Image (tube, rainbow, N blue to C red):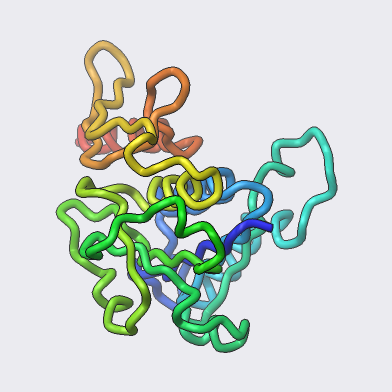
Length: 227
């Protein structure tokens, strides 16, 4: 059985409207793939409207999927909650010392032995990918969780989850994971955008972006030139 990855949603989230930006939706969807089929990804501290919206988007993902050739069977189970992580821990009978907070300011680096059973949940203050970082993880740090960091370079939340999975589940040391830092995403000969984060490198030495993210970035880039 895999681990539970908890994303404490920290984006502005209005109760009366769908306030999940498209790029956040893409990152959240990507986490299911990065976490793998044996894992559970929980999103906490969402408004009711965001819960309803995300549940409709991920409607087929709430129960373990039967074996099939579909790519769906390689994705994690997912659930969405209005409660904050502390409430989820209480209702799930998970003690504080079994939850590891991924904190850029932690003293200890995440290590393969952290997957030996000492932790059951890995907690992320999402979205981690602010540039410059706004240290929203501080809101969770004060709770007293055990903490680990993922190195000195800022990551997007989905990348942070993927790196954590590689270390604790696949037992790949943090420094042996192939990375690409601040990649330039090229759309054509004249258009490109530099991403100010660290990404996992894929087999073609390209950054592992969420499916649809490149198209969204190009769309946003084109909007800036719309007059």
